[in-house]
Structures are given as structure tokens and as C-alpha cells.
Amino acid sequence: MIDSQKIRADFPILNQTVNGKPLVYFDNAATSQKPQVVIDAEANYYKEINANIHRGVHTLSQLATDAYEASRYKIQQHINAKFSHEVLFTSGTTHGINLVANGFGSFLKPGDEVMVSALEHHSNIVPWQMLCEKTGAKLVVIPMNENGELILSEFERLLSEKTKMVTVNHISNALGTINPIQWMIEKAHEVGAAVLIDGAQAVPHLKPDVQDLDCDFYVFSGHKICGPTGTGILYGKEAWLNKLPPYQGGGEMIATVSFEKTTYAELPHKFEAGTPNIAGGIVLGTAIDYLNEIGFDNIAAYEHELLEYGTKKLLEIEGLKIYGTASQKTSVISFNLDGIHPYDVGTIIDKLGIAVRTGHHCAQPIMDFYQIPGTLRASFAFYNTKEEIDALVEAVKKAQMMLS
Ligand SMILES: *Cc1c(COP(=O)(O)O)cnc(C)c1O
Image (cartoon, rainbow, N blue to C red; front, side):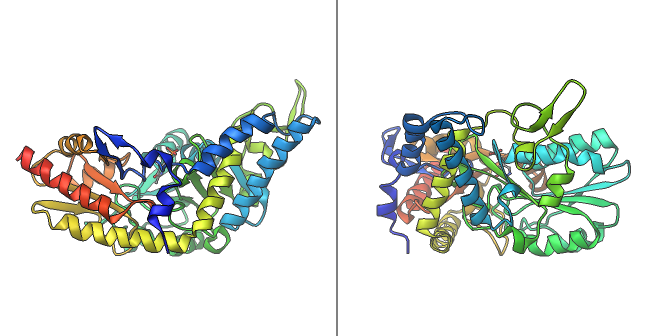
């Protein structure tokens, strides 16, 4: 069970007014807020053990290294990776996808195919497009239907021995659709394709099991799960990470360097050139501990309740249309008011203290599919409440009255 009053006390930022009204933060799919334990852990790192890692023999350097590696181990346990060296620290989802896309060029020839879906975030489209331009491979798109679900019969039809990579999100950031990735991974593997899962919107709501999913890569950002910005994880199967060439050259990622030849370090260091976000990596572990203490079953059940309540209440507004009505979805509601630009509604409800996202949500192809410029997107987290949803509904009604 979620005790929302108790939980809200953990998040100092929530206890404020914006434009004279109590803040209602419904932009969680863009970034989550941070609990006090995370804020404290970041400050404590700099107060107590700040030093560069993996290099010094001095005590602080060893403490910092131990804390960083302990966090890697924690994340390995959390996603059930087989080895901790399959867990790479990145600066976020975008970095993780680019790292894989960049190295994957070694395995592509002209005529090969890279498959993305119509539901992807730009960061899971553009790196693959760039890769296709460089290699002569072809970008193939799994289409979606009016409900915002992938058309799975088309996915099966498009798969062939030409397919080398299938890259798809676990959950859509724009619509909240949960994709049947386990089944998709199995199908992609049948034709010998590798699979990358963009888990940026999944990890705030569930605990992925990468061995059970059997994906080749799984990426996510720390800042959407109560962790610091500039942190993220790329999970890759050991065999793939050994095959992929390094992404960046520099310190930390080498075994030996001479002007004639450099040999690379073992995993995970091969992909972690330079001084990383040490504090961030450590504190990401703190954020994951915090979420596990609340419990992902509790989080999912509570957020589902918010989704059902919010959907029902918003649909009572005449002329309001929800985009993304998949049978399996998370607590994201994308919507528009008939004949009114989403930006105008967003601006008015901000004046009433309500933070939602307006625009294309880094998923322009989805907006093109619906032939709209964008939507308003309310995304709920476990620290939101039904009272806040009531405030959203009232604000949207007010905006509608003012704008029509
Ligand atoms: C947020 C998001 C990204 C990009 O994450 P960054 O933290 O900006 O790198 C990619 N894919 C999805 C589905 C997202 O929600």
C-alpha cells in the first residue's frame, strides 16, 4: 500500500506553490522528482569521499571506487543481469543507444535492415538513421494502430534474415503503451536479429528482468527513477559487449597504450572512458534502494489506480480526446481539447500551478500519425494523488472556457 502523505514528505520540491498555487507535478515521464535521501547522498559523497576512482591507492579513492562498484552490483541485482560487468554506467538512455548504434556498424552491410517502431522516442530513431546512412543498411518501421499499439502481424511480416537489429521501447513515453517485448524479442531472435530495449519509461514502473526477457541490450536513464540527471545504464549481454568496438577512447578504457598499439580494458571499463559521473552513479544506487523499499508492486498498483481515475475524470470533459488507449498502458495520459492548441492549454494551467508536458514529446512520428501538432501529457508517479488529478481536471475545464 502507498501512503501518499508519508511519501510526499520525502520530496521537498513538492511542498511549494507555483504562481501562487500548490504545485501539481505531472511531468514525471520527462523527469522524476528526487527524495531527500537521494539529495543527501549526493551531498554526502562530496562532503565525505570525493576522489577519482579506479586509479589511486589512497583511502578516499578506494572508498569512492568501492561505492561506485557497489552501486553497479546493486543495479545488476535489480535488473537481474548475469554479471556486474554487463552493467555499464552511461550519462542516460540517449548515450546508451548511441553507444550501441555506433559500434553496431561493424556488423552491418548494405541491404541489411535495422527495425525500429512507430512508437519510438527520437533518441531511439535518430542514432539508427545515422547508422543506416553510414552503412547502407535500411531503416524499417513497425507500424502502429489508432489505439497506439504496435501492429504485431506487421512486425512478424517485416522480420527476415535481413533484420540485424530490432530496437523498440518497453513503454512509450508519448502514449504509455506497454509493448509485448518478451514475445517480440523471441520473434526477433528466431531470425537471428539482436534486440535493444529502450527501458526509459519502464524502469519507473517495474523491475525488468533482463535474463528472463533475454534482450541483448536494455537501456535507461537515472533521472526518471528518482536519481540524478546525467546518469544511466546500458545493460548488454557479455558476448555482445565483447564483440562491440569501444565507443570513446581515453583513460580508464585501456589495458596498455603505446604509439604503435593500444589494447582495451576488460568489461565494463572498455566502455567507460574518462572520469564518469561518480557521485551520480553511486546515488543512482540510493534511488533504486528507495524505490525498492516502497516496492514496485505497490507503485504499479497505485499508479494504475491514478491512471483509471484520471482517465475517467478527464473523459467527463466534453471535447477532450485521449490519444493512446492501448489495453496495456502505464500512468500516462496524452490528450487534447477539440479545436484548441495544446500549448495554449498548457500555458493556462501552468498559471494554476499544474505542470504537464505540451508538444510532440520527442516522438514526432506519433503526432504525424494522429495528424496533430502535439498533445498535453499528464504522467503520474507514486507520489501523486487523486486530489491533484481533480485540480488538473478543474484547470483544464477553466482553460477550455477561456479559450473557446
Ligand atoms: C526520456 C526518454 C529517452 C531519452 O532519455 P534521456 O534521459 O533524455 O537520454 C529515450 N526514450 C524514452 C522512451 C524516453 O522516455
